[in-house]
Image (cartoon, rainbow, N blue to C red; front, side, top):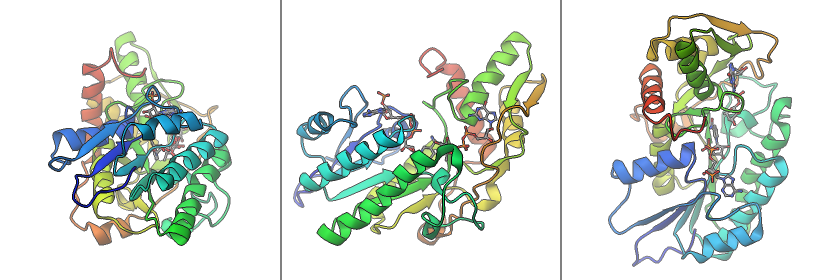
Length: 313
Ligand code: NAP
Ligand code: GFB
């Protein structure tokens, strides 16, 4: 966030910089030429500033005046924390004269009873799935706030809507990690201990999984080239949607696990599907190539094995 001095280089502040999405953006910027000459990119974690409280927002902005804020509000926050973070980030951006903010929404905020595929125009068309209604409404408010900041001040603050993200630096914790990362860890342990892998639910729910590095590449593109205030879905196509069972089999193949998979139907399936359209992204980037899912899962497993000691398990 901060004022872009036309003569000066762009400065970018990435909140959530130590997380799954933040680390992917950092990889793209530091390792893939995503950073332009003289630009300054600053990656923050909760240790640098607690975005839930105003003092945290002051600290993060007094570090200098980055040109841009990629706001990664927080997975584990409650609705109240998300609302506070949204307001702290966007209001600070406004007060500091930030030229652009890119916030993360999520495909789980879409209406639960809907037609498919879901697109960006449908965000507010009905209540989200009951399992995360508080979080979803807080996320939806970012879209409302972005439109208000544009209408009142002309700020081009926008948002991206990723589907299910996975990759290096994910949260691999078996209890509170997302499905792919949790099952990488479960399969790793099952292979080591000679026990079955416990998959929650029937394995029938369907998801579109986006590899974190692909998402990082797309978010850097949004930062630089996407000028709408309206959000944009960042996802593989509908045709890439797979069942949880298929995804789990890809993990087993990547870890060379040949043991038993148990589908524990006493555990909820949650949302059976939330098929999203990436047609809008394709209109902008018809030739963007996503990493094939099996390859991305294999790279994630390899990262996990090589970084087991530092991974969030
Ligand atoms: P994550 O891996 O849990 O990372 C969360 C980041 O936020 C970490 O850098 C963490 O810092 C930081 N953080 C936590 N509490 C904070 C606080 N109070 N103040 C400042 N920073 C704080 O999350 P993620 O998966 O990267 O998600 C990033 C965004 O993408 C979220 O908005 C999420 O809704 C969205 N998204 C994620 C997915 C997915 O499948 N993961 C899908 C769609 C959308 P510490 O390391 O210090 O804790
Ligand atoms: O990834 P997940 O927890 O989140 O669950 P959502 C996806 C599906 O995987 C559910 C099944 O049907 C789970 O029942 N599943 C099977 C498991 N085994 C496991 C397991 O060991 N762990 C987990 N976690 N699931 C996400 C949000 O919702 O949608 C994210 O949590 C984000 O924040 C993303 O918004 C887009 O796909 O249900």
